[in-house]
Length: 284
Ligand SMILES: [Zn+2]
Ligand SMILES: [Zn+2]
Image 1 (cartoon, helix red, strand yellow):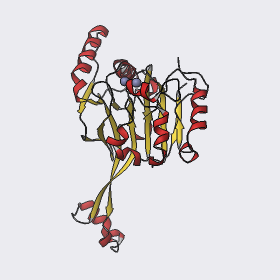
Image 2 (cartoon, protein in one colour):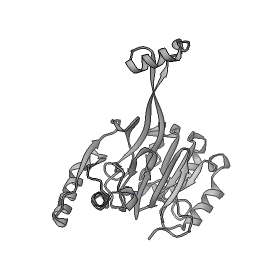
Image 3 (cartoon, protein in one colour):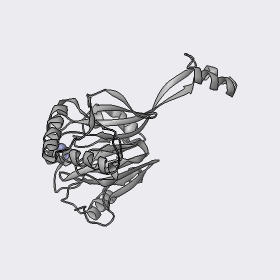
Image 4 (tube, protein in one colour):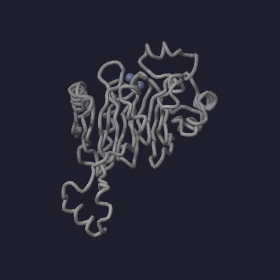
């Protein structure tokens, strides 16, 4: 079974084991985050975001896209990915198409640090750099909303509706509401280089190692993040929910939960969602 956690108004479901496979879905945003394992119920989601090219995040993309046809999805999926890996992903899929003797439909959307694109309805995404081996990105999903400027607060409701419909300039402020940020396979430095993710309503963040089985230094050599680094910054997280994922299989799921409960200050712990199976068995 898939793991599922509720993070504020969002559901995060899927599978994540550091170095093995990670693929998450946020149904409310209509997005899949990484494709390290092809999950049947993710195949109807139209927007796929790859953080980087490592096998545990990208190697099941072809299989996932292949399932789309089976479930009656004939429009190409949009695959957002670091611009530097676009051609390698297309070559890999071209080889798979020759192997399968069938077409894989997709639209790749190359992204670079700071690029902003519309995803779905009022959902937009901005890419930010993460710090890992090779090109890698995190993704901040946000809603673009309009708010009446304070000087127009007294206008009657009907008039406000008319001005909004007609798009009259100078009446509304355009705001970005940060909803869900995704940062995996990265040094903790990402919390300094993309500090707005600390203010996102939900932050999905990797936490590969949790105790002295790997020191912070060893974790950094592997270009990952250690629980000690999250604890050291506990005061900085403004998020309504912090989803920790990408745990090493050095720990059982119950051990992950115990370490986080024992070690994280209560004010942060109450907002943490541990993305690990309740069954105490890693998937597979
Ligand atoms: Zn990984
Ligand atoms: Zn990686």
